[in-house]
Figure 1 (cartoon, rainbow, N blue to C red):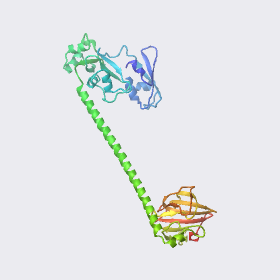
Figure 2 (figure 1 turned 180 degrees about the horizontal axis):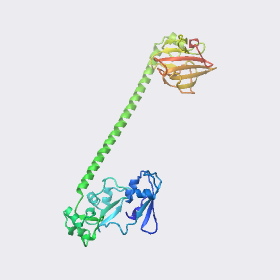
Figure 3 (figure 1 turned 135 degrees about the vertical axis):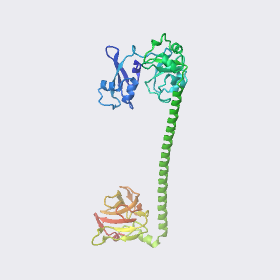
Figure 4 (figure 1 turned 60 degrees about the vertical axis):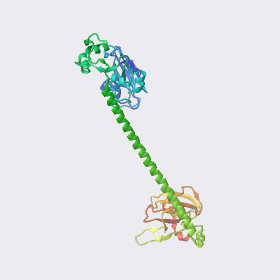
Length: 383
């Protein structure tokens, strides 16, 4: 690797004596891995671990690594005279680099047959750019000769020697790069095109999957909103029907009792009364008013909401309204609450709807009247 890579973002070069040996002080960036950095600087990952005193391969952004280098001025592989090295910059693509140097994409691939993709270039990596006659750039293997390479690609030794300005076939050695004039890496290019197509299809499939997930979520949200609107409309319709069907006398009597209370619902059936229900049953602290789920529940008296939420004691969704003078009313087993703690409500204001939450065997309202924290018989307060 040449020292030109020391100009990468996040690096600085430090050279000790003798000058041939040095280190790159590299600051780890988000997304970096040890293997990527080792490939970028063409060093063994174990050498980085040793020089940087790393106990493992895990890296963290901001960490400074000491990467050992050897200046290659005297040892670097031979490049053909018509080829230059180019260090990939941020934003470069295969197409943009080819256009910049007046090459076709196939011509750039032929000079760099080891490219893993037509769409991704690693910043700091090296591309070889043919500035003269285009061709295939190959690296001489150990024990291989110019004659071997020329014969493999159907060229004469003279053609290869002329393109690489060689005075003798022995002027090259293992590791040197040799340009084979007129040869194109068509198979490599076709393979990269297939990889690009496969990646495109994979991206499109992932985009379709994500779009389908978004559609499913949106449809579920719309169904939920529609169901909520339907239930609210249904409750309003029942409320209007009940108000229209109630006898005048009943509505008049339900307005207010002498103690200032009204019934918390317009239509109901009392299924359980206040008091002891049997020898082995708990004392019932209120009255149970059976009604269909969703039936409106109203404040029996004006006051301030003290509690509106879930009960730990079996009441389920419930509301407690304080009326002053240590008096409270409790409304339990609701399906929905429409008030919040601290809110002031007038007598007859809508508190919520009948349900069967908590310890309940069916839709009903458990209604309590408390004085000084002690449950009282609600019938003594209602008209």
